[in-house]
Amino acid sequence: MTAIITFLIGLFIGWALTIRRWNKVDQQRENKKKEEDSRLRYTPDEKLSEVDLLGKRYLQAKDKRMFETISKPLINKKLKS
Image 1 (cartoon, rainbow, N blue to C red):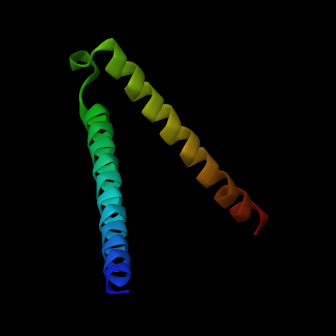
Image 2: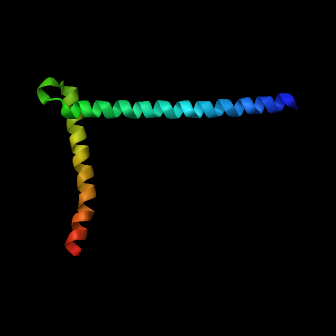
Image 3: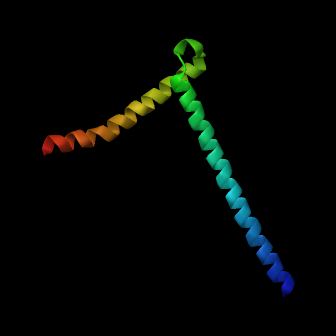
């Protein structure tokens, strides 16, 4: 009985530590992606390769689309009032 309890406690502790580690790795990946995006945004076009230029254009288009999606309901709401 003691062995089963010890095993289950160890299993739960290992599970909790594994989930904590996965979350930390996901957060590190997100931070790395944000750093890469900001590096692309603020680097002049002359210093970027063709692949980086495509990535920069993609980010700009994504930001433009997101801004338009957010601003349209606000503009329509102001016009109706």
